[in-house]
Image 1: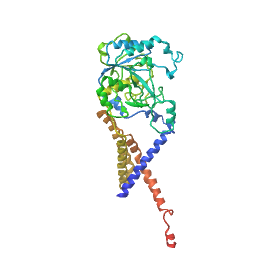
Image 2 (image 1 turned 90 degrees about the vertical axis):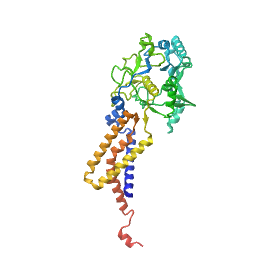
Image 3 (image 1 turned 120 degrees about the vertical axis):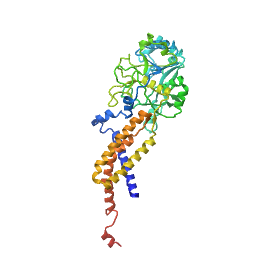
Length: 440
């Protein structure tokens, strides 16, 4: 029994060593050129199916109105804010920067500086708004970036990109950064999570959506922050109107195009005491621009995505909706993921040992069938736990171990164990009988 237990432990360890080796090789992208299917599915998670295919239609969030600023100049944006302010919104959030890139403050490198009247109008409109939230972007100075290139420390930030001081005045601020795997703004971006708070230099800052929610519903926001999670999964509610069908659950937010605000084509009750979130969402709602646009779990094409489905402003609106509804997604802890993976793998190895010893002729067929059934069952559990309970049952490591356990077991028994027996019985470790009889 003791030997059986040790063999099971060693075989389980062999599975995870092999899994680690495969992960290291794939991280090097040695075979990426020959793996178009893997690249197409690499951005997909099983829970995306629950988001885009299985959920019942959520109700429209009447607390939030989303406004497109389009390609309006700063004076036009100021006029939008002035009109909206007439109807007393509770808070206005602006997901757009009004600054000079790279700090080059001349009219050649920063043409908006020439619009002196427009800048003054925008600054006055923001100042006259009771609760106005502007976005910032957390960044790194060159010295910090270069220092962290040579260390394994967690990435930190020490500076902010902000709207120009003469425009932002005393407005509230929150960073707009969203965690993605993209190298830059123009790259393929998938957004599933956000970071509620970040330390920047000697301060701790709120995310843009947190700051908007804090002003509108401070008690609910405090309860959300009290969860203490460094990163939260976004419980997506829906999208604005989508003329091209890229997203599930479009039309879940009231949205006004730039001209509808300027022409006051809306009911006053749509704005009064509500959250108004403004930003760029194409030159108009029929525009297919990819600027500040993300792939999300609501994308109808959840595998091998072709077109992004949601503007960054709408992502922020979904975060605010989640906080106001107090409808969060719980996530399995990392130690729980590993515990389940090791336990399931160990039990499979023990079962495979019994099959190998008692019915060896049936070993291949039975073990492959068991692996397949478990992978299908656990995949369904991941999807439906997420759909039913809002719980992200992350069994990716378990699924990977199950996919490898059969092959690794055969390698362990057929190669590792037999090699160990050959070495143990070789003359390197034992004397032959003749040598024992003739030795002094």
